[in-house]
Image 1 (cartoon, rainbow, N blue to C red):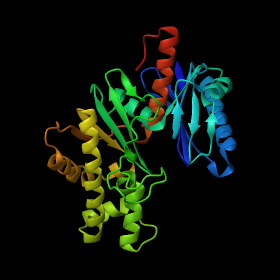
Image 2 (image 1 turned 180 degrees about the horizontal axis):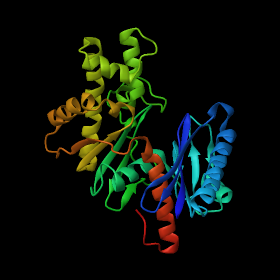
Image 3 (image 1 turned 90 degrees about the vertical axis):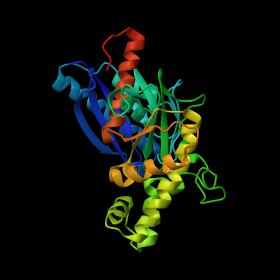
Length: 313
């Protein structure tokens, strides 16, 4: 069965899959990233995982993978295939594309984790058949992928879509990026978790707990949640003014609260628009499989470009 290797690497865990030509996940696996052992160990673990996925394909699907795709966080130079920097994983200027190609014996593609997730949502998920959209991941931070009729736009230097670093509260909370008042310091899942832990007096409380408390009518939780929603709406107003998307797709941990997030966020956006067109605001459809699916799509695209294949998802 024809397939490609797909890897989605996060700060604490990495997901792997074998993806068929129709976008089907033929095999899935998961391993720790082991970042506590340093960048070299993380890279070694990625390559070992890829090699094991290749071996699985040979044993169980009857042939080796045709190509490989790898999605990682941080700053990526997709043209050269170099992972320039990832604060959580510790590497700098890692030639991951060439390392992956050598280890698997396949052509390889390297992409940014959120942009690959956006690629999957655009082709297979909540933004399918939507020429212009914004995919937003609300997790530890906030990052976006800009969908266009020709694909996901990485920008001139590989940093397009970093909406989490739009300054929405000038002079506000310091951000690791060096600015103050960035969107992700108020409206990411991590920010909501921190705010709710303080407000509730429970050090281990997180954003999911805050959402449950909102649904139960806890006034402290409502205040924390409303601050996150209004700040997110401010950031999204800037994004839709600049990008004019027809649809905004939201995924990540905060989106798992469902209409507890989406109902007030839709209203907050509607209250802010003047001349702008209000986009559809919908939850992501692919969940935690989006990264692997996107990495698989990159691999199939690479084959199409290099060999003129017709059968890509």
